[in-house]
Image 1 (cartoon, rainbow, N blue to C red):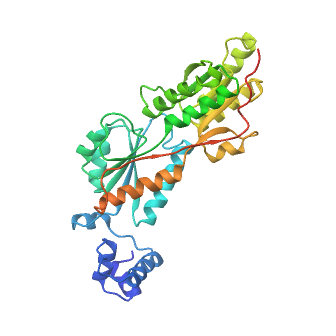
Image 2 (image 1 turned 135 degrees about the vertical axis):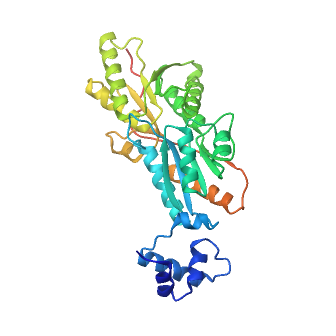
Image 3 (image 1 turned 180 degrees about the vertical axis):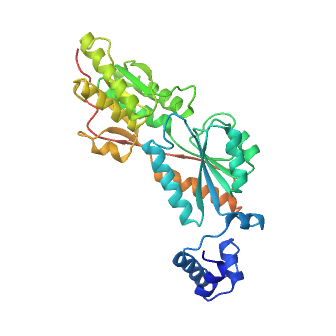
Length: 343
């Protein structure tokens, strides 16, 4: 195992200088020396002992990304989640931090893990079932919350404009002549993000040519499999009823769900968008692989991750206070939204 003394020898500095660089006490160390030490660490593959540094009162240089583990599904399986985690890891590494994933279905276990690892701070995803103010009190570390709305918010947050994005989807569907749409996603009572998107979509869908559109709600997890089930069910309803009283468009709360809906519709012989329009939300890369590409609301996932890490590091350095960041979303034209079918 490589030691700090070996790093010092390779960089041509003292062991104390290596310790200062590792623990962030490099204010009096020249930039050239810091660069040599970091190059030696990289070249030798030296891994500092985080617990030893913590016990010595230094930063652990470890950030936690906290998410809710769901027993019946793989951790962070959704494309949006994996992209966000990857972008957070990249941003953390660029800042000299290690990102630790902390997933559990038990809030107390989650807090215990953070304390055991002596993390410097935490990025908390909205899927956790603990109020931000409670998390801050129990974890005792600076935190930034992702996609969190409503009461109990403490600390900084980074969100996207979920409501406006969904409103835009509703307006575009209404302009295309749709008067009955199906919103599919998890229960809004358990997800503030879904609630924001549902309310935004309802508001936007009623704006087309002065007509009030009807929005129905369909329960579904944001998975490809649930999307297929929704699509097959819609295809059956369409064929059995001749199209009467069946929605002409679907707005899915996530792209992977929308992709599944399209697969299910096509499995049932329904053409998209000629017989059923589908719009998603997220803007994941896989949405561009469809033929035609998925029409969707794109969110800046990588920017969201960078801003979250930057805000957390700023707090750790004592350079910034609490800040609530809301990032804009954009309409991404594909080929899955067309004129409403005429039954």
